[in-house]
Length: 506
Length: 83
Image 1 (tube, chains in turn orange, brown):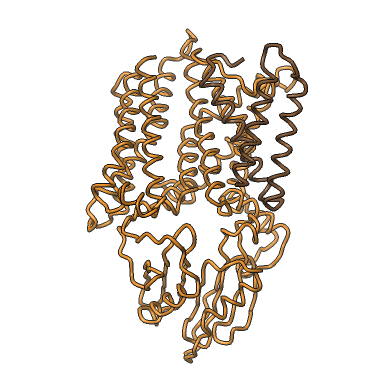
Image 2 (cartoon, rainbow over the protein chains, first blue to last red; image 1 turned 90 degrees about the vertical axis):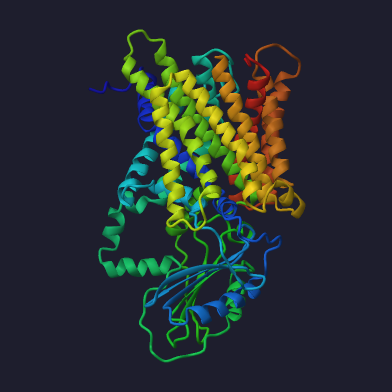
């Protein structure tokens, strides 16, 4: 039975903190790590498709639109739906997709000349983004519930951690190195307290992004009919409901005109995407959505404004409605996604996300460090937690690096190549689990950190050997993404070697 | 530039707070302690001045954490017993 709260509230909260943290700590670490990588989703995709040409300056929207329109008109004239994502500062290529009675298609175009870019089959950074909220190999809905439960546990662990920490301000900068359990505690407190606003924000907003799934009853009560919900979706999202073609051909207005209208309306903010339903038909509709990467004009909302036009007459049919609750949701979503952030802001997100990973890792290690000295503690429980810690904290990052190796090594014509990169990640992770079971603990940590370091250090070399985007070429052409990637890999390798050395000497 | 200014002010502010809340006696402890807090407020003013309210607050909070983290790591790496 749970004792009443009172003088021992701190002990109760500490217990809750320990167990909520431990039971889902491994899953949370994996979610936090992949979520942190997702802040560089586009950049990871660019690195994982080295065939994409390097374009230093983004091409103006109007020129890019013209190439997109010409391509779609020639290649998918019968499609019922076109979608064009324009180049921006993070992704310099045009991304086109279409669907219709003849099937679906997607392609990347060089916006400079409108030519098709053949890039290797990979999920790129999208894999990490999807994985951090719907995992892999398990049904999406179940995975999202699991992630939601983990996030809720994280929120509880954060709040109980604050209550437990008696001298939260006094101990703000305390670190007692080389003292075993005490050092792990100080490191855990450091990573937790210093980035506490971020941890609370990212966990809470993470839950909010999927709130309709976790607590659907409000929505069901307010909009009981399917039709009402459909109406809501079209009001608040840049979404074109399926409408039949009239069968009568009609010339669409040049997209530049719609673009110019929207940019005036959005006070200069640029469009990021255009979708067209029933192109070339009298019933053609176009929805233009602003690029969310313009915080100086649009703020930090994750729901950028959009406008729906009659694509033939140019008449404005509807636009994003202003609703306080929905806008608040958009801001929380925007805070979680961080798409508003420029590159220093994105690095800030990554640094704080890394602090979150470190908080979880030090918490898990603290749990075992504390119990190792307790004479009566279950040896089997400790053995399992130790192995899971090793597999997750060292094995999973290693498996992620292995995925980058596979991205460069797998044959380009391999069927299902993108999936094999992902299978590879999980196979390596499984191998690390087996390694953790079979090797003595200290040796296991040393070997996995060493291997991670070697793989990280080898990746720039592999990139140099297998692509024409190696460090010297990238440096000379001013391709800072590839240069930065190599620099970060070497720095991370040095960190892994340091961890390995510390394990060997401990 | 604004990013660098806000980060620098945060690091400096937290550095002063860390020094003035450490053990040991030295002159102007009280003044430096309040100067530390003042610098964090200046960082907020700079953030709000350069960016809008929402973006400024968001980035200021982020840089506060980063500034405190830098001070913590420097002390942790440089001093075996930082207290």
